[in-house]
Image (cartoon, rainbow, N blue to C red):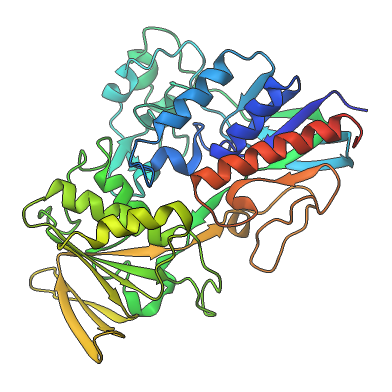
Amino acid sequence: MAEKRVLVIGGGISGLTAAVEAAEAGMEAVIVEKNAYLGGRVAQLYRYFPKLCPPYCGLEINFRRIKTNPRIKFYTQAEVESISGSEGNFEATIRVSPRFVNEKCTACGDCEAACDVERPNEFNFGMDSTKAAYLPHEQAFPMRYVIDGDACKGSGCNKCVEACKYDAIDLSMEAETVKVTASSIVYATGWNPYDASKIDNLNFGVAKNVITNVMMERLAAPNGPTGGKILRPSDGKEVKNVAFAQCAGSRDQNNLDYCSAICCMASLKQATYIREQYPEDGEATIYYIDLRTPGKYEDFLKKLEEDEKVNLVKGKIAKIEEDAATGDVIITAEDVLGGGKIEERYDMVVLAAGMEPSVVQGGLAGDIGKEDNGFLLNASKPGMYAAGVAQAPGDVAQSVQSGTSSALRSLQSARGGE
């Protein structure tokens, strides 16, 4: 049998939870994360619901647990290429892409200042840019710069190398292959926001002031593209009148035929961003099919219902159009409770795009089972477990719970299925 070790594929909140819980119970844990930082989608949020606290409340605790636990190892900019073996004796081949920055980096930023090449900032969903030498975000873990090998001019430029006082940049770094044995594997591969450009009637990617809910999180965040000021993309105008379109692609056989579970709460949360930033005249209208706020979240909904500047309209949006002269967005929708069709104008529209399992686009090593929509079937093969949104849409709390569950199952695998 291999050592009592769990391989965790994905360094988001569920993967971090699985790794630290397993390690603190005596196992070794190896985290493999495709991004240059740990934290996953949670790191891109402005606030959690319903308490509206910043996400680093939870992430910082896990990062500290990783730093102080010698049983945890992690690889960033890495992907699992293949998995062989069975419960108790898996072997994985991991490809680690070059970061071009070594552990001597102090995150001083001199390389970024010297760099004259820009690249789209995927952390902010392309709403701004970074230099080719960049820090993924202000509280990134590990706190170390990255050189984008596709954007960098390489040794023909060398400005970043010359600017670094710590000999931390090595443009000759190459990809490496690592072999890891493990008694169990946790797939915490996470999710991607559904590609809203596939939803023809909502005009995302055509109407400049139609954005998605994940983009709204970055607009509201202090370390986002606008420094936390909610401004519309086309002209930087203050956004005072915002519409939220629920089920953007979800519960739709032409797109995602399931409910993504968190979109209603996400839009209610984001309505509070508008009301907080523009308390006098900021207004939010939420167009919904059903408002799904189960259990403890009902109180959050009631609080929003009491705000006269938050309008809840039961009805599906038929189309979204752009006023070319003003950049305003015009919505045509049904009003189920009021009766008939309505047409309203807004500064900006936020689409509550659904959650699509990342393996739909990125593929998957190993032979863990999948259901029809691409979500992983938990324990469909002994020793292989799914955590977080890899197995089903859910919120942060549910992802943490499933990460803990996966850690417990990994302990059982390490003990021979006791």
